[in-house]
Length: 94
Image (cartoon, rainbow, N blue to C red):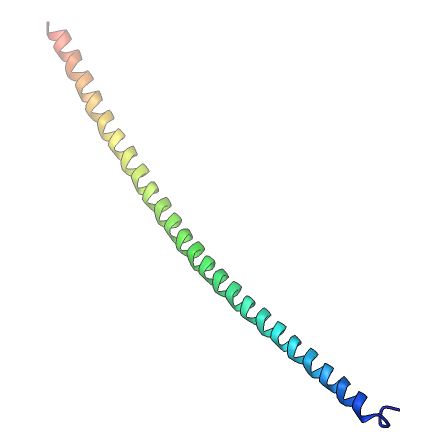
């Protein structure tokens, strides 16, 4: 039946081409949107990695500071003990 009416067939073809063009535009739009989101995700991933590295460095620095603080306290404890000994000797001498 379609072969009898060439007009209907070309009208159908025309509608199909318009639909195909609209689908292509939609797909291009989606592709562009996906690329934008991918770039954003890549940036976030780089920022997360940078922050992770920074956190790791800060933890290492905190450990070094804790160690230095402990060492400082141990040194102070030695001096405090020495001061106490001196005070005892002075007290006995009097």
